[in-house]
Image (tube, rainbow, N blue to C red; front, side, top):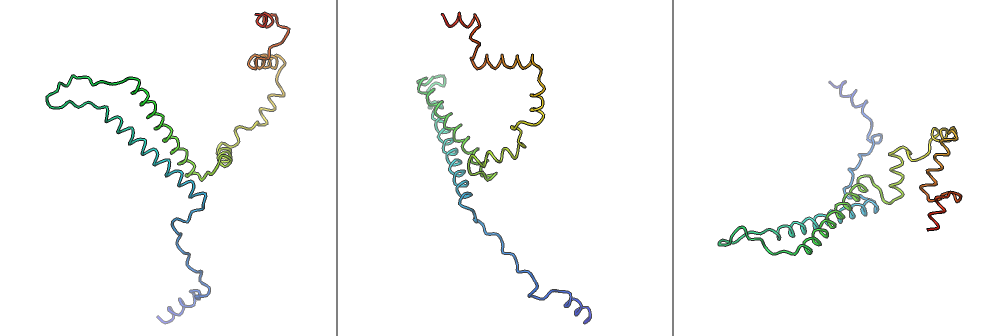
Length: 175
């Protein structure tokens, strides 16, 4: 037994050679940018929650519950214009706050601090699909004259730069 114990003592490294233990990661060790993203997400989530509560209260206030001795076919008085304005306002409030929560949630999840970082992240994600490739450049060089003429005509039509010698254009301008 003493040999086995001595052998294991020799195989283990000395305390000076051992690596120091790694301290556990501290919770809440955020950078200022990350704190700002988290704060914006919490604000947007709070705004969404409040808009949902406001909408719920407005919806419940419109419910007609007849009292004990009233008829249940009684239609309460209402103003359709006021109800329409209220519906548009509540819908806008809900959609804007939900959109803000979604945008700030995506920014928090992907650690995007500004528009430039979003642009770079989308370029990286899409693999530069928006750039012209060699194939598109080659196809543009090898285009036949009829197709080029047709493209130019469509481009001129869409950009309202018609040829000046066209009789139809002159007639329209004179009127």
